[in-house]
Length: 222
Figure 1: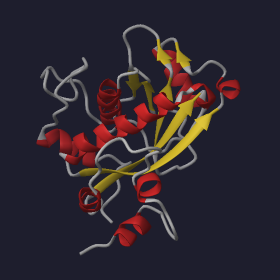
Figure 2: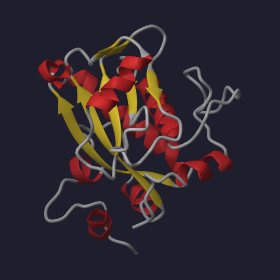
Figure 3: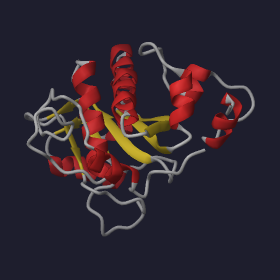
């Protein structure tokens, strides 16, 4: 039977570490977590994420908990595809440095945010959390985005997610937008995660799961 230590080393942890904060990557407990399930999923495919709070000093404790819950929901959804959400790297851009990007006014501004900033881990996908997004939009992403984020020919290198003050909605939006980046497009089925309206059923088909696992940001099993 594989050990926690083996899986931890696989995702880059060594020495002493917290199971909740380091292995799962949560700042606080979002609910009941299954260590066995995560160990099993890490034996298959995984994606690591740079979670970047834009204007981080303006985020409340409740906002940070909402991010934890959103990741928790994403793990549940992606787990049905045998795809683990692996290492989480929490980062932040101060409000002074963000220069207003914490409040996104258009899709073009979301693209500019991803162009002007990037996470510090090149093998992890960048996910930017902002405080507001103008209009009815709650998230934006490239479809089948690049892994070579230094390649200037790509228009958008990451996903942008707005804090909705509804963890269930933010969780679906996070899973939906990352799935766009991993190659999925919209579908009409109201029960499917890729339906363009939220809330939806959060389901994924076997072919969608296969497409997710084939993206260049997805790593093989530990």
